[in-house]
Amino acid sequence: VTTNKHANGLEYVEVNTDLCKARIFMQGAQIDYFEPVGKKPLLWVSSADDYQPGSGIRGGIPVCWPWFGMNDNPDFPQHGFARTRVWSLESVKMREQQVDLKFTLKLSDEDRQYWPHDTEVELLFTLSDTLSVSLKNTNHGDYDVSLTQALHTYFPISNIHQLKATGFSGAKYIEFGKGPHPQEDDSVSFTRETDRVYTDLSECQALHTPDGIIEVRRENSKSAVLWNPWVEKSERLSRFNSDDYLTMVCLEAANVLEDKITLAPNESHTLTTHIGWK
Ligand code: BG6
Image (cartoon, rainbow, N blue to C red; front, side, top):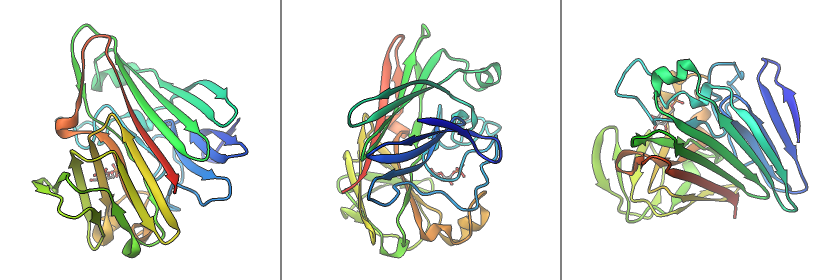
């Protein structure tokens, strides 16, 4: 495990083991690279991103916390503030078959203007030939706190026209403020902008790509977001090439809408995503 600095000044931790290579930025505790040895990388990043301090990286796994999407206050940043803050690397544990890294975010006075609650937040990475990421919240205040959150994972899928995402039967979704729609098929194909919040979604999904099958599993999460911006929105997105929508999809482990979490004093909750090539 080594620490280094990107050309634009962002600090990162690099992990290189017999099982994987990974890179995690201190800003946002954002992982932008994960490659199991002998397999293709599991995370997508836009080549248009220039890793500027102060803006989240367009790819990898941005952490959306302590709210997902727009806040009721329109002046507050979309997807919360955690993805643009510098986190601290608290511990590194080398085990035989895995490396665990724990990051914490200390709330500044500015953060407290957005979030005046005594919430401890930690992000734990477990790196082996698969990747697990856990977002843990603990309420140290003396009243209940509710929040929404997501691990906004960008997957490399090589060709959106050939992608089939499976594991969706039985769920319902809301798209562009409309819904809820029941999900009829187990699989989803992509032929237009897709921006869905799924609720009551089973724990396991799979992304069938021309390069193989990516398995995605969630814990302590009944909701997930499935997103591809397609042609028009790609033109409007920051740090995104107009043809990037062809090679990425986001499937985000979440606690949103009726799956938002409410923590009583001293209560904790841990949202986890596990991803790997089948
Ligand atoms: C997705 C949302 O999770 O994130 C989309 O569902 C949004 O509506 C996308 O466009 C990207 O958001 P941002 O803030 O990273 O540009």
